[in-house]
Length: 482
Image 1 (cartoon, rainbow, N blue to C red):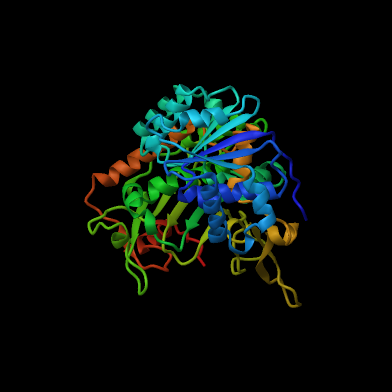
Image 2 (image 1 turned 90 degrees about the vertical axis):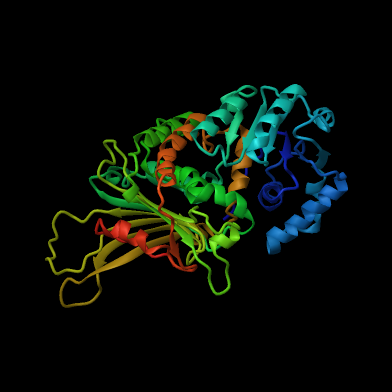
């Protein structure tokens, strides 16, 4: 099965920080794949911009090496590379000064979409925005893409929003969260709002609880200094897991429209209950036989930063009051898995007797790996001699259901093309970011004022034992990370 590809309009895309890890690992490979799928028109141009002094040929060689390093067997062949490279250019630029900006401005065309991808540290967002204004590159068709972290707390997020608002309208700002570009995440809305049988059950009357898990096997690696200042709460919960929670809990928007969708997500964030310290567990991975500890990797023996966090979250609205959402994420865990599990309540009465084996219905939405969905239901076990119940899975993977040859685009492929289209549905709005920080800040402040340190856990485990107690106190269990 081949996905339908709709070409976008001609554009000039400038990638600030084009020699950095994100550009080489994700942005440029995503653009090459979209080019290979025929989504880029003849008039598409991509301009790398960074401090490094290099020629266009040097930049193309760097991009080609990045394809080999990060795409492996999926790297484009020589013919596709050559055709894609014709659209590339490079400008050495000083984000904090004037060097290179006149050259860049001269390359901008008047009659096409202008997109500027800020693949740089947040401290450079303001200077870049100011220089785009100073050198007259901002037009009604200009859009900017900003990566997380969008602020470090509510105060810094507000300051960044204010800085960008001096030069750009909110409709021109695309705050990217790559989780929202994942096909399965987008399918959350399709499952909920394109099928009649889920929505009547999607409330506290029928849902016992929801688990959202994002587990990683890797450590912090080269991100140690950054991660020691952010931790799992800032790096994962405030953005990625928050977005998943919103899509699960939001009310149906009146239509699939950017502001309609984001209005409903914002309502969920405003309805989140404050989280009590007893409903938060923080963890930190210890050293393993072949791996360093978190403290060693961040080069801080006294670090109190969490590499794992689990929370019990309540939502005070008519739909969800009384149904807890359990969130957990961590590094150096048993396996790499991202999933959402909706555990439904038991029927009010069993006609099969109290001794009949029973497991509640469960809907599992797998974000990675093996993207798909599983619905666990009770059936009669085949055979004579009575009514024996058995819990079975109705399983659907994208690869099997839609064809092994279907290419599921990387999140960045979808999101960058949405920027060119001018579709902000899968991007965060400024007030949404601020509301998320307003909920997150008190949680962080509570443990920063405490002497408690994160609980240690073994690499390759499912996290600290304290996280098991968090959910066991409610007579529930985490789904196994396997």
